[in-house]
Amino acid sequence: MARLTQDKSDYAIALVLRYGSLISTLVMTLGLGLMLLRGPAVSLPADHRVRLSLLFPMLLRMDPAAVIEFGVLLLLLTPLFRILVAVVSFSLERDLKYVLISLGVLATVLLSISFAIEG
View: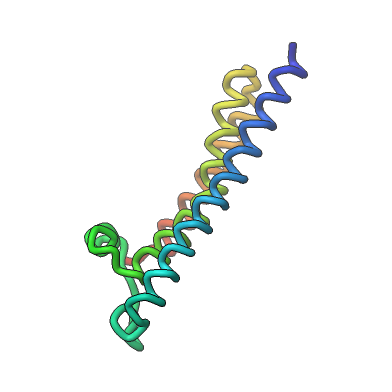
């Protein structure tokens, strides 16, 4: 029974990693395609930096740089989703030790992200 649960957990984690990287690659490819169609000068001034607060309005306008940045953001969040799947998996297995370890890793990653994000 425990082995079956472990196999399902491993499969769920593999799916998150596989599809997270695939979806982010597709989104970045879409952004690159938009940039090639519209030209980089429209989208990327020399001092370009997309802020999170402006990302979604720019995505609605299909701004190529914003689409690429969203793809990068998805790629960066993929390991975070993997940790969340591990927490849920260990919770279903009722393995408190590894739930706590995973929550510690999650807290560390979230704290690091909060220090990295400005505005």
